[in-house]
Length: 227
Image (cartoon, rainbow, N blue to C red; front, side):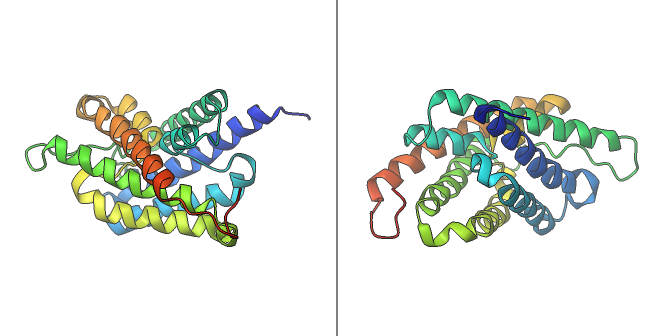
């Protein structure tokens, strides 16, 4: 069956983001919520699976902030980005809906929505952390994706970067770095998660923009650079 390239990319982003959110937030939903190391490696594993299964189709962005960076850096048109964003958000939403099937079990602990206890950590601190964390993730993706010698290791590098950033940022902002990962659980859970959702949309997008600016300023072209 012949499927158009935009639809292929949409389906790839849908599936990849579904895997990322299903495995990552699923680890929180069913028992690892208090184990930050386990959660971090669950998200890293989800990213690893997605990158090596759909990366050759769409590049496996899995994250609206990364797609936003590719638009700003003129590696992608807005029209194509819309397919990516729609795929990412719907993929994440279906992952959260799938996890809801376990809501009646004794081990179920929610959908893993992002949020902070504002009596312990000011919301602006979480916002700044989301900017910095996403900045590092997006800059890594931008830089690594342009190096020929690193192409076989893309999945491993991104997965380990994500693990490290979640371990650092988890206790402060709950480390989303990804609007799609945050939108779906917040919409389904409502309440405080929905009220704080702006932190996990605006913060990552702002961090993404900063990463593009810094990467453009610092970029150095040599024999190992992909044109």
